[in-house]
Image (cartoon, rainbow, N blue to C red):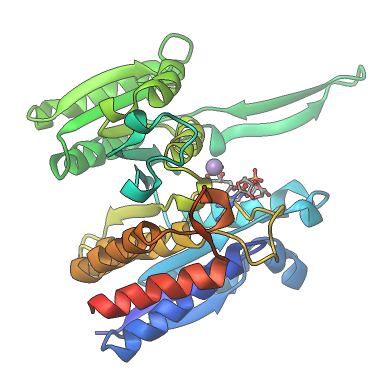
Length: 366
Ligand code: NAD
Ligand code: IPM
Ligand code: MN
């Protein structure tokens, strides 16, 4: 059976990181896998080509694909473009139109990197947490969302945080299901002390928990959660939170692992009623990194690890996913480092050399 992948490399370091995954796909196909890839444009490059952050034709390709691999979008070049067609709008449209409500952002500390985090080694050694971010609701999409001119020299900006019961129920259920495959512990984060959506979030997560009483559930205010994430992150297993808090907390979690360049993610929809298959998009947590784009020094690990998540969640290729993740760990154990995770006594390599080394390890194990 062929696996249809749509590759949307995007802007900045997106194409640099995606190039390493393309090499990997070619190697896997030589070894009997059957990936068929298509490419499309998203972000600033799509805006330059046809004035939209993603075209309807590429949206149709994304809908038809078994999975989408996404690089990164954005950059200073497009700072002045209209809000509706800014590069980030392409990513948001993909998430919304494909109904990718569940964003899995695992943060693990590779043993070889335990000493290179900005936090103390014992705080992050052995870390393995999963942030589950609600991805299609909340303040990202709530209406009204506008700036109005008040006519007295003042303007008013409004963003709206909206959550319906079903949106909280389905992400909470997913958190409990995922916790069952891990350490059976969910921490839900909101701000029920100031936000109505936090009150409902807390209520619905608690009600959903009734069907999962074997899983331990804690509630934490999201600001305190941010503090606890840095103080003692190993107290967490699965963190479930809304779209905006999840965005911020996952960048914090990225630094626990050493660099934004290390953190992969999977964005999943609900299983199809007939086939059981989920729509899915896999992307690194980091952005287009304009400060290092074009220099060949970007860390491709977040992108490669996102592809490992694709193998695991979209294609049930668990052996290959494990092998790829082990190849990443092995290369780090050998002392290879891109600039963002470089430390004393290690060997600094560029994007391509890091990708090649991971692919070589993967081949050795195949
Ligand atoms: P960023 O993630 O692009 O970069 C933040 C810092 O991390 C930079 O110093 C960058 O050099 C470093 N970094 C990020 N990824 C790295 C990697 N793989 N290897 C080495 N270093 C890496 O965030 P930003 O600078 O706030 O945003 C830049 C642009 O990217 C903005 O337009 C933003 O909207 C966009 N963005 C896109 C996505 C996405 O496409 N999913 C995510 C976040 C930000
Ligand atoms: C992320 C990014 C996006 C977000 C941007 C680029 C729209 O920061 O995926 O974490 O805010 O969700
Ligand atoms: Mn983000």
